[in-house]
Image 1 (cartoon, rainbow, N blue to C red):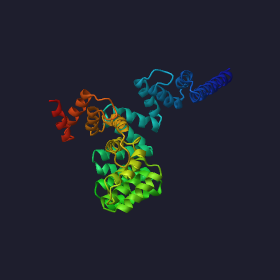
Image 2 (tube, rainbow, N blue to C red):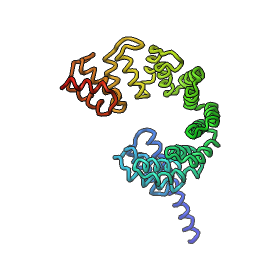
Image 3 (cartoon, one colour):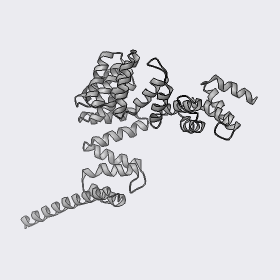
Image 4 (cartoon, one colour):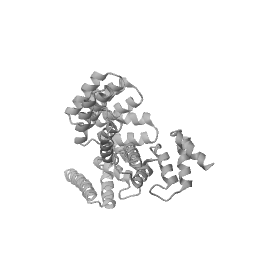
Length: 333
């Protein structure tokens, strides 16, 4: 009898494990088919049966409102369960939530836990965090650890650290290593270093290499290179060409391109395009407010609107960005 009961218990345990595995597998399959409501139900069954792999996808679904209304407290609960089983992804997401909630000390602790499990992304985030706080020693510790993974971004961040400490030789060496590992941002960084040293041809070469490799910031750098005449000659046509490629990635590129359109530099006057670009970036790039004021004041490519123009001039004058804004406001008096 005792043997029979033991055998029955083993059968039930095995059936439970199989059912649990089935619920988890079903949940993942349904998730991949975008059937989120049923996927969540299956994953919750698996989680109740002790399937630890289910915690992370459940957390993600609550976090992003997939198959359920978004519920951040529930997401955190499941992320913490996943983290208890050493899910590095869960630890990183918990750190993001805590940073957003202005709890940086707790956020850093989660990153440190993940980094202790050899999580490369957490090491890089810790390096960046300590750099922002100008804690160069701690930043260097984490970034040096990250470079052991032969990661291009880690080498670039280490190069940025050395650059901020004015260790330019070490910085250049780190950037070059990052380039070897395929980091396009390091190409742009090397261009910036060359530019600062007055090595304009080298800077231009690095910017072009970065742009050709798909680095969007290099497009802005090329536009500004020609706009400001870094090589000795201002070239508005080339500036417009590069800023036009960059404007969808960079708000300052959008502003500078709008000014070129507004003044007809490097190509035809185009007040309509100038206005569209300026309106899309003026909240973040406040230099654009003056030009928007001029467009609406004079009716350049748009019906004149003196009240709207006044609004932009007041903002521009309040920020002290253009003396001309004060002059325009006197017209209203």
